[in-house]
Length: 478
Ligand code: UDP
Image (cartoon, rainbow, N blue to C red; front, side, top):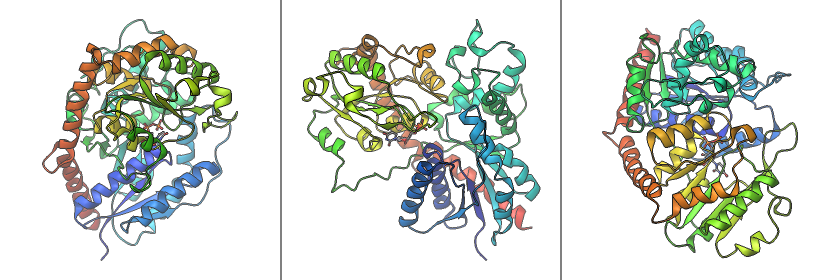
């Protein structure tokens, strides 16, 4: 008989899809062929996302057998949504019947279903089918701890979090300024907030929660979750910290290095600061001018991934038009010191390069893990999702970063002098803050690599996950 399968149901955003695929592949390898992997693929609502997902799947299929992709029928996207998280949650929920039909039609036993963190509505389908259900949490354990606390905070705090006058106490973390809370929970009247509280409540029903972190990075937070301190003493589902889960397949073959990499080859070691802002980050002309002046005045070498504002009504940043975005003469004046790249760049290959000594990042969790994997210290510049909270944990809790003042009330604006200060603090060889961040990043690089090696904490957590899924599979087949 075919081996039992684990069904993954990711949201299509690259930070979720790729991370879940990679975690699935590790689980598969760990099972030594005792499990198979089935991925249910939604048809994303935009052409751009559809072609991106198709590209990812094509590359996975070409890299060898192992994953079975099952394309679900398209659904009509929800209309009149106010926010991104609301849209994703509703869109995922609309797939419930298709997911149920797809799982029911599988000819091998289903050992478990792994849902995206925005997919908790599908827990009902898993219960109906009596299949163990796990949640894959693509953010860090600190964000998960906050999510576990959110339903209680919802009752305790009557004002919007940004209007709170006191700090929030989250077990395992230093006192948290409420202004660092994730964007979708800042406005309680926004449907995004309601959806967040909904998902947070439902995490408690999962059979386990897989988190893309390593226990050494967030020890006290993981201990607080395990002791029920984030859930008023009620035991929370078992957490499996299996990270860093990074898809380390480089995007360009070694014999054809990317132009950014070829430029880096010409720079001295640890001399370049990278600026890159995730899949959704972009700069207006006003902001780009401030960045340009800040970089120029810092005197440091830079590789700046600059993308322009999306067309109204869409989310996708556009390739940068330098004529519209950059100050006159900037490229000419800085041509010996910097490279501005106008579209998505191969971030992992860049971070892996010895010439990169610092990273100004929007602070998506995948970007943070990639930076730690290569031991690159950071300056967080949060823009959206849970990035303000990541910036707080990175600076105040984990340590491999230098803080920068970001004006959340002005669309996360940073002026030239503050960027100049932060870049110097990160990159200057005589900066105390920079030295501390560099040391911490170097320690964390070693700790992350050790965690995923045989005998490491994440290796052990993956083994425990496999054992628990296997026990579920045995129960299902009886
Ligand atoms: N990324 C990239 N090039 C870019 C921008 C982003 O390769 O120009 C990759 C980055 O390496 C990371 C992912 O896109 O793997 C972004 O994930 P993250 O969680 O950091 O942020 P999100 O895009 O989800 O906000």
